[in-house]
Image 1 (cartoon, rainbow, N blue to C red):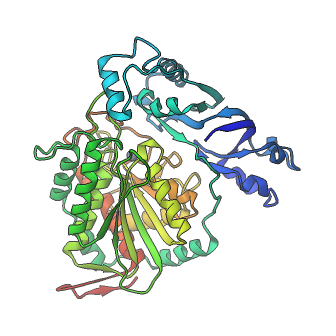
Image 2: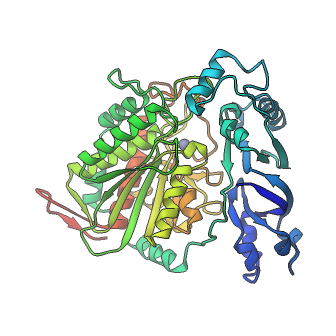
Length: 490
Ligand SMILES: [Zn+2]
């Protein structure tokens, strides 16, 4: 997109929307997503100067020109892992952006050039004059206006513990999760109590297979030729094809869904409903990863090989016990998460356009790591930030019943994974995660994110996968086919 001002980006604190009268309809038509604890609205002058006062709602940022608006900022890291200040990181980032390949001799190393050629299919001699600007600064994040070239390159020069999000090219619908949907979940919540059939199914999750699958995805298994699962890599395409085959073996119908040129596809698998319900229950993960800059390795054993392994383990347990769901259940392995949830945003928007009735979506992202001396944990997304309280409550109750070994608490940051894409479309969602705290995995976004290392706990992945599987069994309802004729309806 090319934005020509004068436009105003209004940043409203997460809970601030409750105070906006519904008569401010030009504002509600100008929603561009939620970033770093702020809702973003991009409005023209007519809206800017209509009857209400912007300054009461939030912070107003002038936008004169932008090909792209991008949020950059520190991921929610434990402070022990981040020795540098946000300001110095930002300064370093801006210097690197000004000296992208073709515009500065110091970064045009052979390694850098080959990285660019591989990932962006560029001529090493291409001369670029990058255009970017800092529009707004917060404590641990900033809003940048950048041209297309800079956007294409930003991931490669981003400080290791930072993430970025691109604002969409057109307004998003601002759809709250409806009262009707929340009431349905509240009714379900009341029905969740210990069920011995569910306990037997979830206890069938195999750590042996979990380890095998994850080590195939990371390339630690010598028979695997996957070096990287970066969204733009060959390895990611191979991983997607491999995932599709494994998930189909469990009886699901799968498709590779392409959403944007250059990205490896989403892997979308479905277990059809035995009943005539139109509701859908979704488990999501992302199979793409981000390694160290310049390295060809992006093994992502934790981020998000752990969630992807759990998804496969869940599918295997469904197949082993002959589970037939009463409502449609989808297992989705998204791509493009590391490039600001591109794959899941496309997918969730497609579901909304088709009018799909998503009863609940649970994202599993980074399930494996806890620091030495810490108990196994389950971190839940905080619904005061992103997500739906009823979904979080269901997960917490299910965890207490089927995985009492987990210490449960909130992960203290908003969004940041594919559940946010569903939240943006008004679908009830939550994330399960490895810690009731900030990210403490020292191999986060590092090419050393392997599974055979201290703190990487397969048993914790299994415990969290049990929570995910027990949740969909309770919420979708199920029968057991074949030899298993015990049945259950929650
Ligand atoms: Zn992740």
